[in-house]
Length: 78
Image 1 (cartoon, rainbow, N blue to C red):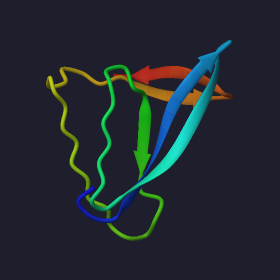
Image 2: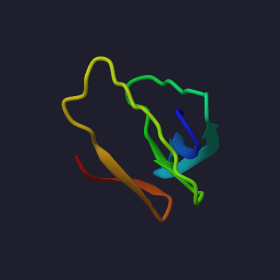
Image 3: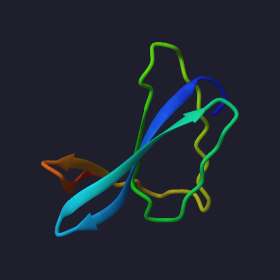
């Protein structure tokens, strides 16, 4: 995080089509990393501006989008 703070919600489990998530705050000066296949969403829950840098290696050729609807993870595009 360059400045401000973001809230990251990650999918940590999927049993019988019911998704379990975990949420954490990533604040200024901190970073996160994860493996291929990690599904998460990032939002700025505050009123202050937040600036983050996202770096992917190898570079992405596409990014899937998902929504959690009634506790079920559903693809919503790419």
